[in-house]
Length: 155
Image (cartoon, rainbow, N blue to C red; front, side):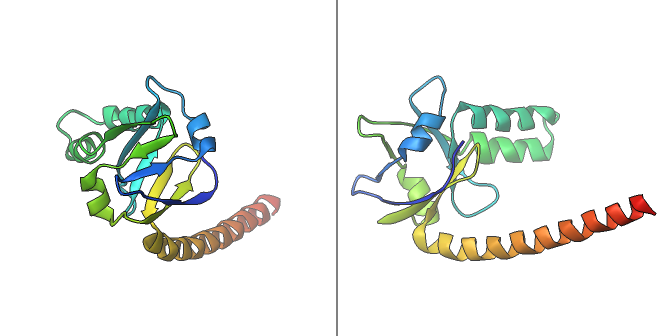
Protein backbone atom coordinates (compact mmCIF):
# COMPACT_ATOMS: atom_id res chain seq x y z
CA UNK A 1 0.00 0.00 0.00
CA UNK A 2 1.07 3.55 -0.70
CA UNK A 3 0.86 5.50 2.54
CA UNK A 4 1.93 8.93 3.76
CA UNK A 5 2.89 12.17 2.03
CA UNK A 6 6.38 13.14 0.90
CA UNK A 7 7.86 16.30 -0.56
CA UNK A 8 10.45 15.51 -3.22
CA UNK A 9 12.74 17.68 -5.28
CA UNK A 10 12.60 17.39 -9.07
CA UNK A 11 16.10 17.62 -10.52
CA UNK A 12 17.08 19.33 -13.78
CA UNK A 13 16.35 16.11 -15.73
CA UNK A 14 12.80 15.91 -14.23
CA UNK A 15 13.73 12.95 -12.00
CA UNK A 16 12.28 12.33 -8.56
CA UNK A 17 13.16 9.68 -6.03
CA UNK A 18 10.17 7.42 -5.44
CA UNK A 19 9.89 6.75 -1.69
CA UNK A 20 11.41 3.40 -0.72
CA UNK A 21 8.11 2.27 0.83
CA UNK A 22 6.38 2.92 -2.50
CA UNK A 23 9.02 1.02 -4.47
CA UNK A 24 8.64 -1.92 -2.09
CA UNK A 25 4.84 -1.93 -2.56
CA UNK A 26 5.05 -2.36 -6.32
CA UNK A 27 5.21 -5.76 -7.89
CA UNK A 28 4.81 -6.15 -11.58
CA UNK A 29 6.33 -7.14 -14.87
CA UNK A 30 8.91 -4.36 -14.77
CA UNK A 31 10.81 -2.37 -12.16
CA UNK A 32 8.89 0.89 -12.23
CA UNK A 33 5.50 2.57 -12.12
CA UNK A 34 2.63 3.42 -14.41
CA UNK A 35 1.76 7.16 -14.39
CA UNK A 36 -0.96 9.10 -16.16
CA UNK A 37 -2.97 12.32 -15.74
CA UNK A 38 -5.45 11.78 -12.92
CA UNK A 39 -9.12 11.80 -13.89
CA UNK A 40 -10.12 13.13 -10.45
CA UNK A 41 -7.66 15.97 -9.90
CA UNK A 42 -5.03 18.16 -11.53
CA UNK A 43 -2.10 15.87 -10.79
CA UNK A 44 -0.41 12.68 -11.92
CA UNK A 45 -1.69 9.35 -10.70
CA UNK A 46 0.59 6.37 -10.43
CA UNK A 47 0.94 2.85 -9.16
CA UNK A 48 2.05 -0.63 -10.01
CA UNK A 49 0.58 -3.31 -12.22
CA UNK A 50 -2.32 -3.84 -9.79
CA UNK A 51 -3.51 -0.27 -10.41
CA UNK A 52 -3.11 -0.70 -14.17
CA UNK A 53 -5.11 -3.95 -14.02
CA UNK A 54 -7.85 -2.27 -11.97
CA UNK A 55 -8.31 0.53 -14.48
CA UNK A 56 -8.22 -1.96 -17.35
CA UNK A 57 -10.92 -4.01 -15.60
CA UNK A 58 -13.16 -0.94 -15.23
CA UNK A 59 -12.63 -0.07 -18.90
CA UNK A 60 -13.39 -3.62 -20.06
CA UNK A 61 -16.70 -3.65 -18.14
CA UNK A 62 -18.00 -1.08 -20.62
CA UNK A 63 -19.13 -2.01 -24.13
CA UNK A 64 -16.71 -1.34 -26.96
CA UNK A 65 -17.62 2.03 -28.44
CA UNK A 66 -19.31 3.31 -25.25
CA UNK A 67 -18.37 7.01 -24.95
CA UNK A 68 -17.31 6.56 -21.31
CA UNK A 69 -15.11 3.61 -22.27
CA UNK A 70 -13.53 5.67 -25.05
CA UNK A 71 -12.95 8.59 -22.67
CA UNK A 72 -11.29 6.26 -20.12
CA UNK A 73 -9.18 4.60 -22.81
CA UNK A 74 -8.06 8.01 -24.06
CA UNK A 75 -7.44 9.50 -20.61
CA UNK A 76 -5.93 6.52 -18.81
CA UNK A 77 -4.41 4.22 -21.41
CA UNK A 78 -3.58 6.96 -23.91
CA UNK A 79 -2.07 9.16 -21.20
CA UNK A 80 -0.11 6.40 -19.50
CA UNK A 81 3.66 6.35 -19.24
CA UNK A 82 5.68 3.39 -17.99
CA UNK A 83 8.44 4.89 -15.87
CA UNK A 84 11.31 2.60 -14.88
CA UNK A 85 13.37 3.08 -11.73
CA UNK A 86 17.03 3.91 -12.15
CA UNK A 87 19.66 2.53 -9.77
CA UNK A 88 18.92 5.34 -7.28
CA UNK A 89 15.16 4.60 -7.23
CA UNK A 90 14.27 7.62 -9.37
CA UNK A 91 11.77 7.94 -12.17
CA UNK A 92 11.98 10.53 -14.93
CA UNK A 93 8.73 12.42 -15.40
CA UNK A 94 7.85 13.09 -19.06
CA UNK A 95 8.00 16.75 -20.17
CA UNK A 96 4.38 16.88 -21.27
CA UNK A 97 3.13 15.58 -17.91
CA UNK A 98 5.30 18.04 -15.98
CA UNK A 99 4.04 20.89 -18.15
CA UNK A 100 0.42 19.79 -17.78
CA UNK A 101 0.51 20.08 -13.98
CA UNK A 102 3.29 22.57 -13.33
CA UNK A 103 5.64 19.98 -11.84
CA UNK A 104 8.98 21.67 -11.30
CA UNK A 105 11.39 22.18 -8.41
CA UNK A 106 9.36 20.52 -5.60
CA UNK A 107 6.48 18.06 -5.80
CA UNK A 108 4.30 16.35 -3.24
CA UNK A 109 3.86 12.58 -3.53
CA UNK A 110 0.69 11.40 -1.79
CA UNK A 111 0.02 7.75 -0.92
CA UNK A 112 -3.58 6.70 -1.47
CA UNK A 113 -3.63 2.97 -0.75
CA UNK A 114 -3.28 1.16 -4.08
CA UNK A 115 -2.23 4.32 -5.90
CA UNK A 116 -0.34 7.54 -5.37
CA UNK A 117 -0.56 11.05 -6.77
CA UNK A 118 2.17 13.53 -7.71
CA UNK A 119 1.20 17.18 -7.25
CA UNK A 120 2.91 20.51 -7.54
CA UNK A 121 3.61 21.47 -3.94
CA UNK A 122 1.45 24.61 -4.08
CA UNK A 123 -1.51 22.89 -5.76
CA UNK A 124 -1.47 20.10 -3.19
CA UNK A 125 -1.62 22.50 -0.24
CA UNK A 126 -4.92 23.92 -1.56
CA UNK A 127 -6.21 20.46 -2.50
CA UNK A 128 -5.41 19.01 0.93
CA UNK A 129 -7.37 21.78 2.68
CA UNK A 130 -10.38 21.21 0.44
CA UNK A 131 -10.19 17.43 0.92
CA UNK A 132 -10.12 17.82 4.71
CA UNK A 133 -13.37 19.79 4.49
CA UNK A 134 -14.98 17.14 2.25
CA UNK A 135 -13.79 14.36 4.58
CA UNK A 136 -15.03 16.18 7.69
CA UNK A 137 -18.47 16.86 6.17
CA UNK A 138 -18.74 13.36 4.69
CA UNK A 139 -17.84 11.68 7.97
CA UNK A 140 -20.35 13.79 9.88
CA UNK A 141 -23.10 12.93 7.36
CA UNK A 142 -22.19 9.25 7.55
CA UNK A 143 -22.43 9.30 11.36
CA UNK A 144 -25.87 10.94 11.20
CA UNK A 145 -27.03 8.32 8.71
CA UNK A 146 -25.67 5.45 10.84
CA UNK A 147 -27.29 6.88 13.96
CA UNK A 148 -30.65 7.20 12.16
CA UNK A 149 -30.38 3.59 10.91
CA UNK A 150 -29.65 2.33 14.43
CA UNK A 151 -32.62 4.24 15.82
CA UNK A 152 -34.92 2.99 13.06
CA UNK A 153 -33.76 -0.59 13.63
CA UNK A 154 -34.43 -0.38 17.35
CA UNK A 155 -37.96 1.01 17.01
